Figure 1 (cartoon, one colour):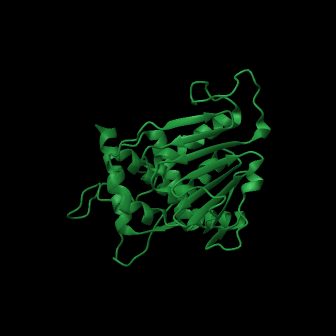
Figure 2: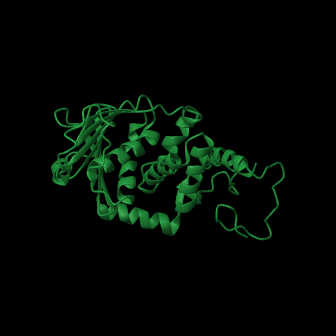
Figure 3: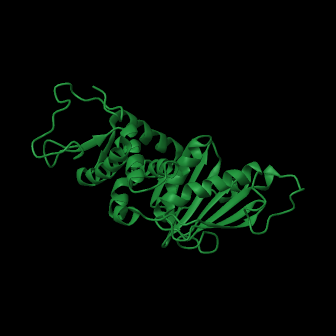
Length: 282
């Protein structure tokens, strides 16, 4: 039997609820110490439903789910990082961001929003810069509208004023999905995350921040165009380094074997997604 989320259920168990449970109780393991693994499709689907259950608009919910799931697939602990923030994200308002700049460089003040909400907005702005289609009234100081857009000039979006910046690596998954060539650099304390998306592939490195060249703490830079080669990190000191081949290997493992998740944290995500299903059925 096929559930609404597309997963398969044993026909003998279909329609039967364990004693003391409700249909929205979520997944269970036979033993407390048994590992729980979920498919990549279920991971992204359940995350998206959870974000929608918390009040995130559908489009942003999907992008946020993609970012968190990418962290899980790459071994960066997306679920474990998300779980303690669920209470804060639940029902959180998403302020209208403030955009300044123009032509090839923009600054986006997220005004306190989570990167899981504001990150996709920054990626959308970067795409408009790359395409040269930025609306004249979007930026505070647009350039000469009669001057043709130069795609070789490069494009940059500086994102500030947001929380959960440690999810910045997940932005590269959005860039790869959109076919963009982008470097994402994010400062988290004394460390900097540098993620490159090119040709649909992703590479990651994390190491000590360089005060003279890296973003300020809590900020994210999204850079496209010729400057990508100049900003690709070649840090000799790194506590995380995933080449494109390593990322692809982890993605293949996730598809073949599923992703291990903490049962308690996954239960919370499952329960939040149930809100979305209940609203959908009313």
